[in-house]
Image (cartoon, rainbow over all chains, first blue to last red; front, side):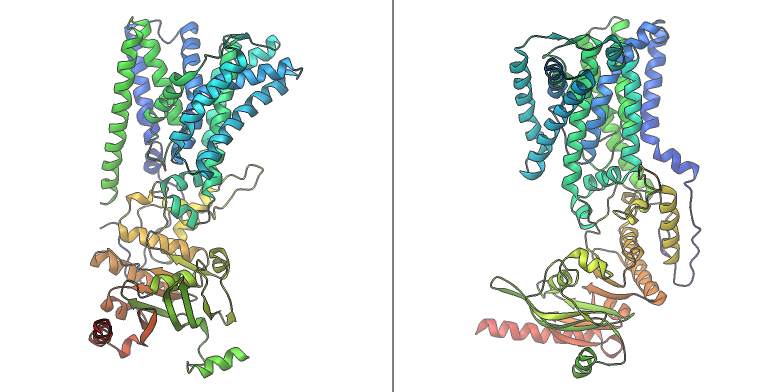
Length: 338
Length: 269
């Protein structure tokens, strides 16, 4: 009965300028689902161990697990929406801080060294995007290559040894040494990336390009430019995360980050409601997804479950999230054709 | 001036203004001749239905009219001006819009986002954010104007039926101030009810005025129902052209059959 065009001359369609409440709820349903999971998990661990959430130390601990995973996930989410993926982010994580250290050692002021570090990460992102888009390689393959390439460059340039984080205490404090600075960065970046995705042409076109690349180009959208740009964004965010973490632990380590952080970020994106199929995704969901991983990690540690157990739970959570997403998506589509 | 002369020469009703006119259009791809001298006219506010088998050259004709391909020979007039459509953007700038079979919709995006895809309304300010409220209003208004009923413009298009999605694709083309609308197989793979929905929509657009429509079709009865005039294309040529009221499905079938027999006979030789 819905979805029929009325007969000629019998038009009676009310204009719908503002979204009704139900629609607003539907728009945020993916985020609300994962938020519910996060709240339930936190409540459970708080119940099982009273020091879980509401002490300063555990909040700092939690935020420091969540922050790097979330920031890297934001870049991954933009790529996944456009139909791409970046496996090299964990290696860019270790690469960018060293470029910053080299710039600092060469005499650059700290702010400039920081810019140089982020710019070097952007360059890796640009190479990832250029090879993927112009040489038409699947991004999985491109970034698998740059994963090893960038790791090798970092290890060679650093001779495999960590160095002390440069800069004044104030600078280091803003950049991650203060307990909550990383989570402040994370929330600010989440807002910026959310606005980019939902409220700019760039974000909307990325979604369109991921959903229907041919259709998007027929509409005049420069699909390749978007994909390339999103690789640069993902690279920059990974580099920035590496720098923040370097300042936090006051040591720049060539072995930092790695594939663990890459796949945690992808897991956060998937659990948060961004499927690998492209066309849709959510930044806020990714942030909550990272929080869920953090809660699981801290919670199991506190109640005395070891790290091996954590991986079992993480694996099951990713599978459950994907099954849930696909299943709910199917039900919703059926529901739409009343 | 010479324009009016040629129109008179070609025997078309010189009084009716033309939205489009093709003269002896030829398109060759290497050794293959896809169009072998097609001449046609499209009156202002008229619906022209083009029928023909696969390989008759319909798709090639559409691609020339949308600026995707350029003809090898022949001339094209758009609103009385002789024009070589250099690109899709060029054709669009002249008010020629095409709804392709794949519809070019982004399924995960909402109806109103799709209707403004790559033509988003932006808010004032340094950040150039998109104005969701105005796009939503304008999309709802546009759909209301052409009588397309959807539960909400916020729905992602993946939750619409095939007919509704086709209607959204047509609405998007109309929304961009199209004056000439090309519909490539708009009723393909559609049930009777869905097809009726689109036929209603096209007739309503015609009634509103200001729009000339070319429909590439498969079904003879539906075409005679909806189009003012039908044109039959076979092997890159126009083999028949008549006002819908003055022909019938059996007549069209007979012409196709005759041509088919001739083809078989020449093939046997």
